[in-house]
Image 1 (cartoon, rainbow, N blue to C red):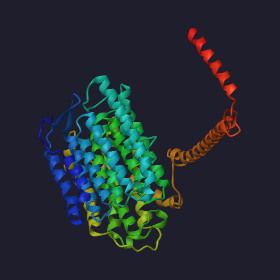
Image 2: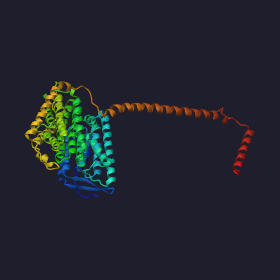
Image 3: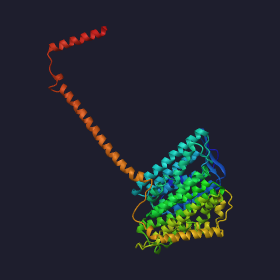
Image 4: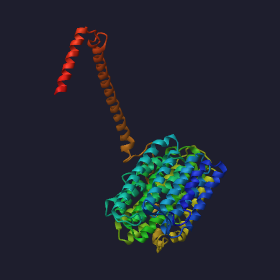
Length: 561
């Protein structure tokens, strides 16, 4: 029975998303903007502690639990839904919009989940809704959507197995900090890391996200990986393993983004890269590091969505996404170019942008813990971010050569969404106080010290110099990069075709053997019962009487025995 009467913020987005397909165009556009605002109001009306509970199979479920961490993530998820809805007002694929809002609502549900079963329910709803968003990209997205769903259902199986084992071992459902001292908890961690884009399955993200529509990838960039970051913050803060997983993700994203030609795949790889910083911060585990991971997730959703809105606007207006097909668009798409540059500076942690006041908290935490190698690698990773996302994306898309394309800036709603997030990127960078006040721990950190500003300016300026010195090497060709996904995108189809041929040959052999057997039986039957068969001949009456006598004699003998 429900113990407390509150309206879960997630319900507004999920049920609102489900009714979107039944609305006419104008009411649907109003709903896209009103639903997130209503959900945001409910997020800030949710009290601390268990706010909505229920009983299920003898277990007490905490459907809504409020605290600073859950409220921070729910807030940015809802803000993202609003900006994404504004950007997608003229999207005519209503299924995508409905799935996107259910997806956002499920992410809010994860943020407020107070127990593992509730978490799993919303976790799987995210997987289903996000798969529909990918598939809404069109026929070319079907294969990517199937691979995406397969990976995420694998992650769901790992998570559910871990939850079942945890319940069996402890009898508890509470979703709180855990130590890695049992197999079920390792399974839970593995399920979280799959959604975070951690190795060895990082390739699902750049494989699937870029195949979605011009608006779909904006939604996809925000929820799955950041819900995983929230789950790691809640469940495994201070697990040292996450430091090394995060560092791997940082450099994985940089290397593959530098090699990539598709502008949306560049930005997809940079999602893995940026989540790597957050995962490393969670692994460090101090209050400053956890604040940094949470704040960076908040800022990342905004500037990554801004970058993808910029890329989506280019795709919407030109139909092209390869760097080799683009260039010189700043002439006719100035607002898109400026907003894209603001997003690029933010992801690069340029002073006076949001990335500068959030990502640097993680590096500072590594320094405070005397993790010199980690601090150095994070600094190198920051320089690499400036190479692939801070310079490469805007340079090859908006500048470099003149592609001959002359598209205008996108419609007003798309421009408004980009300007909104560009303003937020700068506002958070200039005045980080309101964001810091929302973080789960008290903040004692000053980002704007002279040493810190000078260090980052030097780092970024020398990275920019390196980019232009190596520009000839960085020019891309019409290629696509693969890593572990080679096994299921290249080897898998080849193995499947060979298995299919083997199965066809085995089936043909079986059919031929059965055919030969049936023919042999038919021939034998015909030999006995055919017109010339022995059983079809006319027997004399004397012979019939003789054999009848013999049969009766045998029957009498057997009866006597």
